[in-house]
Image 1: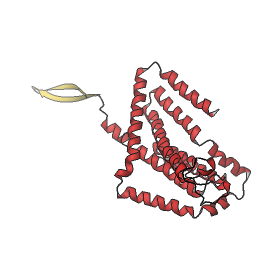
Image 2: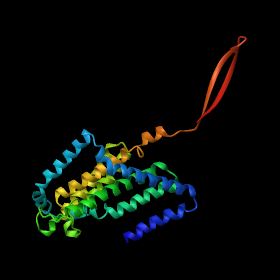
Image 3: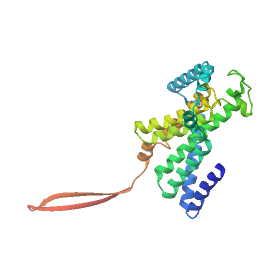
Length: 277
């Protein structure tokens, strides 16, 4: 069903754009931007400054420290399961990779079809954020090979380079996607309630993964950090930064001025026009 929904969205986009050559140019340009931003993202550690390394150190310390809270938080998360909590934490069934991808394709398609650059760029930024963060998360899952909580092997059981679903607990893919998506969306509107709403939704997804005994707390913190920093990188990149783009664009517009002169003691009004490029 999920695959059919995604195929439908993609089909609608293709059918509505097939007759417009300019649209294909737009898609091509967006894809080139996707590759450029991605190249900068994956090579960014080579250009870290002291502030970047400081953030990396703090994040590493938080993730490392949360490792010692894994058992305690697991016990708490498995206590007092209620119908209300069951329904609340079902959010991880919807705010996850498949539906996030469908939503992203929908946003991009709407922006493309209506020729609304702002909406289209939101779709591009979300896609960039989720893909870049997703690549890192998928790679780390296999490299780390950590056993999921429900296997009862303990939080210190690691099986490097494993692809078994039982042994790809760290980092949490759901948390990665949720925070990558929410970080980009939160950036779109300068309103505290809007931002809190998106990050609350992402936080609920992370909590749901522990509630369902799929991840340790250190897994979701690591996944959330990857998603958040990927989102921040994307929205701050010059190719996506609205202020930079607006300043770099050349806008054609009509100029005019009204003047008042005196000739032989008689007032003469003048009207001048100009066109700037």
